[in-house]
Image (cartoon, rainbow, N blue to C red):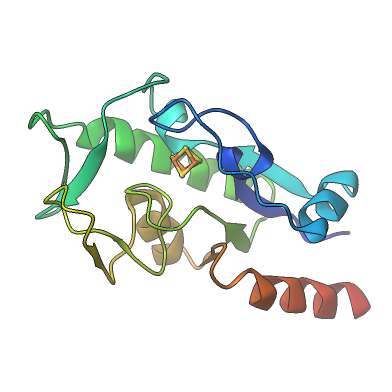
Length: 155
Ligand code: SF4
């Protein structure tokens, strides 16, 4: 049985980001994994009920706030809960999520001041997945995930 991977929808070219754009990764491994039907796709923010486009949001003191100060934490938590449910449904142990996002970020996110400054924290979905023993990788360290999956496939 091939190891399945949870993946950010925007990585596959879907226009689900807050600004109505995608963030496709032009990496041949993504196409291969897709052909192997091992990718389980989610945009946690859309899964949590947010629209496209939507106001930019950042995490400040544990809450997710838009630039206008609207608290959208519940939608972010709902989306994270759905991402975790998908992982459990498919026995997923690894995720590839878009870095710096307040949902999907893993190596860093923006600091909550809307000042383009990043800090070494995680997005809401990544926090929930990590707390449930699902390891999250991003475009920054994709090569590590490729190595792990290749090793699993070889065994
Ligand atoms: Fe991409 Fe995640 Fe943002 Fe959705 S929530 S647009 S999947 S980074």
